[in-house]
Length: 487
Image 1: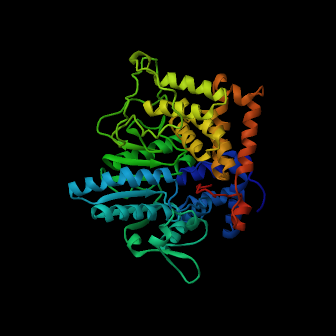
Image 2 (image 1 turned 120 degrees about the vertical axis):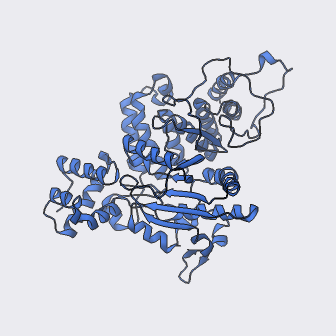
Image 3 (image 1 turned 180 degrees about the vertical axis):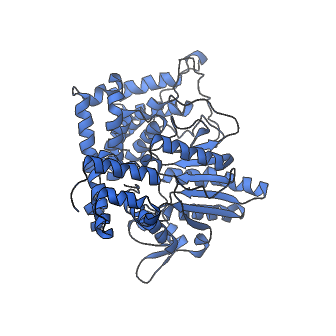
């Protein structure tokens, strides 16, 4: 059997994958899914798509069900992925959890949910060992789960080469790996012994922990392929499994906005993490915003950074400082004043000043979405792409509806050579542009219709999607250059 699935075949296949693993396939994945289904039908000798799908969902098709899930979740990732989150784990989150586990005389418990080929849980083990070298060890359990049996086989083997090693943090390879005769690298025994791998379907299987046992859940770039209801169910499971004060880490493109109100959003350095608190937090059905100019002015000396400062992020040294004026309490700029001045500076091409003012506004009010957008634009115009990406990722994390932020992030990621990240952000821009306010889009549209920009974003998303070197994956249209779990 060859060719693209018919409408009915595609709908039936997509519905089967939702039932089996919660995976959602949009129309852009139709060719890829067609190639996979055609290949599986040929290999198994089934007579039609419907015949194959009925068999896969039957008890007799259990083995083939696993083969299908392996095929549609081709994965690639790398060690020390998402350095802002790595820094947050190393400097704030894990040290606090280790101290808490020691005082409670119980194991530190971590769940890497959707662990792919193992780079993420091994990285977590490396960070834990770093902390143990400073403060002494505690018992630790790192359970790593994935729906793909083939990915787990790679993880258990623990031998890596190529891009995943090349992108590891400086010094990590020498410290935690052993070079093999063929040039590959194997994970050291001290790291391996901390991690246990298990086959687990996040949608249909029970979690590997009981209620209140987990200190940290890391589930990155998994829920972006689930529907909203599936994601809500999964996040509720995470919440039940976490201890009070435990943490949930998602990917930079994922958010709990309109998903769950059971967590507090915590800025830690350049990253955001979610914390399970005892008291319920206020509803986040709408992204938080400043509501008036009566916001109290920021303190002259920012408080020490820490995960307890729920509404405050660390203040870096400003890139520009205005000429000091005589201190007048009534004239101290509010975050909204700083944001307004930053917009003016940006429009006049004073990018360093605009970045500094926007940074000061977000330091005083870390949930000010537009402040991160202005800062990102100003930094990008200065050539500081890394700084721009960090600011714009905070903006889309806090407000997934911010279409202009998605578009700006996409163009910056494309410029720095991250095609997979750019593709994801262009797709997010295409999805959110139709509902964005005309005021926020005026500069982006430049006289064009919104539909034209949506079409452009879709084309750029398709063009930015990288290709797997593996011929089977390439034939199927599957790519995962940046660690996407690409259906």
